[in-house]
Image (cartoon, rainbow, N blue to C red; front, side, top):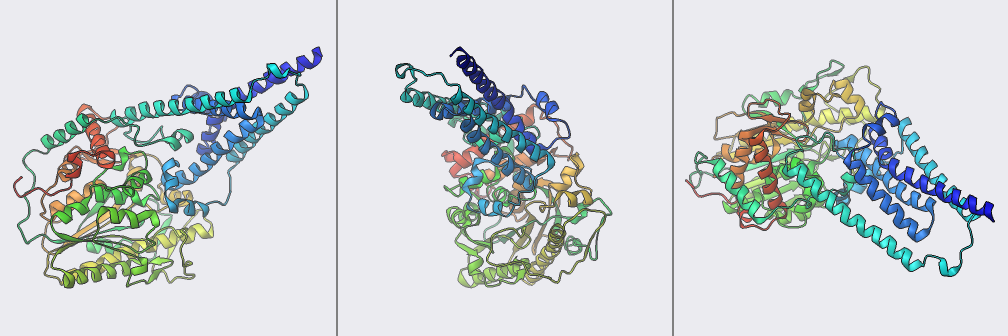
Length: 630
């Protein structure tokens, strides 16, 4: 009996040490899987052993293990049920990080199209580092089940009166779960206040990799009071001063047409000679630049996340200071958010939104309706549906825009605001009713030298480059049409983000680095702006996409709103203010905010929060145009 007691004690100590080792190592294993650093796991572990984000994850995992252990009494089950979600998060995070430089978050699960896109990536190819991590996690699970076997074999009989009641074990489990909720709320709350309101998020570097922490992030973990909101609006009112542009004369407000073009990027950013084209994809762009305002804008996103750039233009919100691009869009599809649509309605414009794809994609059927567009056109109601390899082409989109413009003239004498989102050059992985056209007659031949590209990766690259070329041509089609119009018109096209280029393509382009200049090339998108009444040519030199609405309205001679004043103040402080870099008004890189910049960042956070979650009277009127001279 003494021998059995001895082995029972040893088994229990073994279980306790195993669980202790597991909870202290698991968060680091998940991130090691994601990052695949060149260093060893030991070096990685001891480099970040005291990092508070890992400590946060250790506490959450340990309490979860204890809660499951209280219910099941099984160490193996406890380890298995916590390790599976962690490794799934690491795997999903590695997919999203490769495409967007952003980890998966809880808000991602709110979007109906996200799961469909993810399925197309589930090829289950793993690197050697990732396989080693999976093996280690598997060994933890096996050791847990072995511990359970040993505990059963050497268990010492206990009188029923001395056994821990099941009700008490359930209460202990519930207490652990309650502590988890309280702790997560407290940690997230305090951390997000520090990062967002104190301006620590100058870039995402250092905050990308924490798998569980990023998944649990929530925009509402920032405490902002009504008093804070009022102070921030007053701050920007004083900042704007009295030098704002005056309102346009009645009857001269132009029609405004804006296209956000999918994966439209400037191939002039390629710095390597290993890639060559039979025709310069940007040739039509350079020709248009002779009569258009042109240049580039700075984007917050990489390879995906179109809704971020769409939201920034329509609302003026800089998504850098929010936790997730999809999280922002999840908010604006759930309730009315002030936007540029309100501005044009106040000026008695007829508003139209066009997207040549399914209406449920990113729930645009809901968001466009909530924004108040007078007319919405999705692919099922398009009159022009020619295909570029798989999706409706930019040429067809241009033709549809012209038709909506002409129909508007015959339907009403109202001025028009038309906002269109291209789909033509989207990654071909979406679940769509049409398969990609085989042997498509691309106008440009692409050569990539000394790159280890699969046939699929090369095909995707060729498709993207030709899509950029055809987007340039489509804008020329619009300019040619409106040059014959006498009614004042402004036509603008901007890109949403760099296309999703695989690592080998980025390397061949000379754009696989993380230095400032490379980041600028990766996160820049082209822009063209033309009108038939304003001969001034603006030069865009990296301004935020969130500034574009203010720039267009000022260029068109339209009145300011409270939001455009706020944007103008931001632009006067930061030329570019995106997740990967910040520039001052003169284009110089900012590595650390000084006090004045930090103060503005705090007020930007408050205004953005009010727009998305608040209910102040300032928020409701933020996009209403001012009367002339006010």
